[in-house]
Image 1: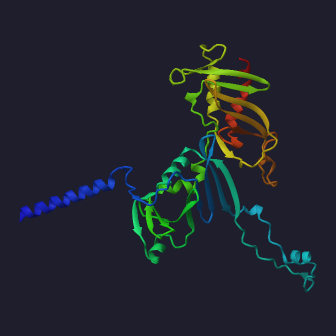
Image 2 (image 1 turned 60 degrees about the horizontal axis):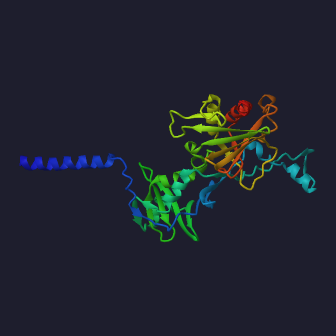
Image 3 (image 1 turned 30 degrees about the horizontal axis):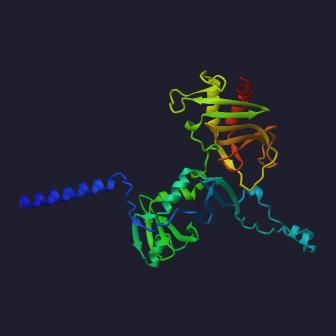
Length: 374
């Protein structure tokens, strides 16, 4: 008897240990084993729509290079100070040319109830980063953790799939695949996904959908250059009618890299090093739509990058008066200071004008005269 109890105890213990190891194991990368579809070639377009936002991701090809352009539209209720006040009965009738009823010599004071403010669309466009290119590749071979098959209508409601408020469309060529996005599972936050074509329901990892829903934070390309710094041999700086070429030496050895004047290629110049480091740290904060024309800018600087004699691309820095619009009712101490400026770049990588952070742009321009004359 004791022998039998011991055997069962050991079996139970082994099962518990095995379950614990499976539960706590690190992801292997092979867990999404159930294929949903495998599109031939890569995706050309991804569309995501929900009550409060719409995301469009388009893949383009230009000069043999693929890039992704995104458009994110959010639907928001405008701030109260932007919503027109409700009209009174008096105002409404006077505009219509009607007379007002008189009650004991007093005008009617009733007001029309305020209408519910409508959500207004606000759209951003921007260049996509490498992360969104990787996502498009993953989604072209979409797989699931589990397949639930065809499920009853009450289960669809439980899985958050009955109202069809969130929709994901994947397009390759002329072939779209549409999926309804449901709620998340308890614990690991996987997502229920229903194929609109055959009604089958799957459970997919959150990695496929989290980025799309917050695309403007996850997928915006912040680097205006798109150049590997270790590929740069020379940069040409042009500004104020002057031009200067400086060389990067020992570019493959981080500990030995230095910058030098092309006329003194072996002489280290710390100013060049600091300035080029600041230049390459420039980051985009906002893009203009590709068809949008900016105005009032003054070119301050153009930089072209070379590997040998081959151009790797160029970037132009502009300055203009700050175009931000602020409420007129702001007190004097809250108004922007006179002469406030903002900085824009246009490069072969951004393909559109884009705003950059002022602090770094100002540092670059402050040291520019020394770069051109040293």
